[in-house]
Image 1 (cartoon, rainbow, N blue to C red):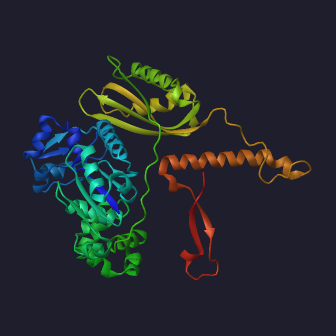
Image 2: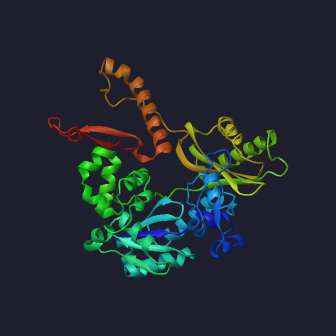
Image 3: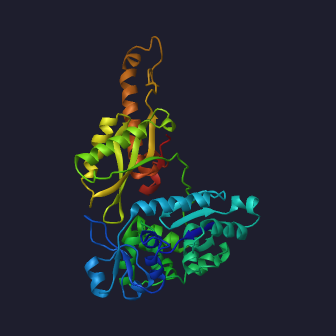
Length: 413
């Protein structure tokens, strides 16, 4: 059984201060919305329930939102505070033994089967998750992630809706088509399906998989699978070390002085004994702004680095994206690379040792090429996820169906 944890309007409440007066106003009927980030497309973030009643929704253009609700109050976006609060929530769930798969800030999943031996039952596991989160949360459970998500959105804040496997598909048939908007792959299908008159998941399932595949391609096939109660298995996040350094910049709010503060942060981060000689592949540069809110930028290096000058040079260009003067800078390691002193490949796999002739002479070149390929795959995985590098495996070359001839399989690291 999969459990879905949904923290309603997480980014809005965290950006507003969570327990502050502004956050209490969100619960008291104020029309609030997270302001769009400076320098990006002017679309509002999460909105309060009162703003939704006025026709404002997340992702709407700022001009349209203000036209529909002239009294809309914009809360400065704070991705730094949101990331910190969400990491704390994930660690709280992991403290009860859950292997968590985060979908986005405020939405996560975990499997309950392996926790029955710790807490005694699924109900006790869900109660423990509510207790460690310590905030209003909607929770649902079902045989798949999508079923659990639908159950969580339909449940009340203090009750958990549990869908049994036998009746999950029948229950999903009556749910609105807007549930597909919670998946990145199927979010773009909500508008065209609505224009076609498809209002529920049951109507979508009755259209058939071939018709949806012909009209929408792979997203249509995925949408049909979700409507039929099918989903891919959970992929829990891997627990990684968290290294970060922060510093108040004082009067060095911008310019060359801010770059010198960045150099100090890079030096302190590389000097941490927890690094153990490993290189840095991806880091997160964030800032607390003097005007309120925060700024956050993920940086993936072209190759794993441990040279402070090269790291500072790569990060200095990102400082130009700051939307306002900074009050504090923070640098955190998101992903490590190989240790600096790693031994290179001396003999290629195809070499036969002494007497191998030309094969032995070419082994250093093959070893260097293999090392570059490993570095390129690690770079792609850091940017686009673990499924970014796949290999084609021929399984049925005589099949008339192209999809059956070759399948994509992950490349082992």
